[in-house]
Image (cartoon, rainbow, N blue to C red):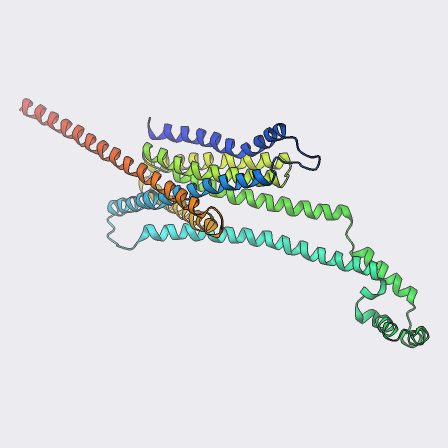
Length: 397
């Protein structure tokens, strides 16, 4: 099987694999609801005991996937990027010893970092806007409950003086005298009319509140899909730009293990949040198609590289470095950081991380043996061809 066929097969299998793990929590939800009689209030299959089992299973899978990605990044992707840059430098006669591969990986790392920070900034801006609206509605409701005491002091400070004086002294006659002295041109009825008008202008209706909430959820939903899809595209791109079939399969195995844990966790969270079915399906389809799209995009880039060696080789190296930087970010800021923050199953998770790393290290070693045997076989064939040509030349002489 050649490289192009391998990439197409991996793209199809990868899409089916991601769709399976994304839709699995929904199927489990329906299955467990049939098996177990639940109360009228319960809308999910998750009770306290089963929730702990799911957390335990997901934690081990995520830890194993983190070890797999760690080995993939450090033992495979960084090495391949370094060799590609050295080959490119040799072809162009560059003898600079500057660590270009590490620089490109760092740029890819910071690109994903600031992209995610920008996404969080947009989401948090919506949260602050929502908090301000809630604060305004709370003030308005308090104004309705306590009457005149919620109005700004600059407008009705005489009223507040009356209430305070009445509370302290308990003298109604004195309060009435103070009221007569402190009220200026506006009567109490006119102040109440102003308050009612202000409440009517500022208070949001229930429909408007629902619209704001829906827009916020939709924006957060879109940003989440965009961020995760970009990660998936870059992961697929790192597979699509590989030059050998065994490298394609090796990298696809490591990325698929990590993506399975992520998609399953996201599916569980969506089910627990009782998200609408159409939103779950949109999310799963977007995540399913992202990685195959990245693989096919990498395939196109790799094909163009053979047609335009210099320009496209540089583009391939940059994309490969950015992919390594993206996976490096995922390792340290999403996987290992999350594992350090957890306070349960520490020993089991540590062994799972180590197990994932050792598995991919073993596969990398077997790949190197296969590659060495393949190179030796190619050298033997070239020597045989060279000897055959020499015999023909001797015979012709």
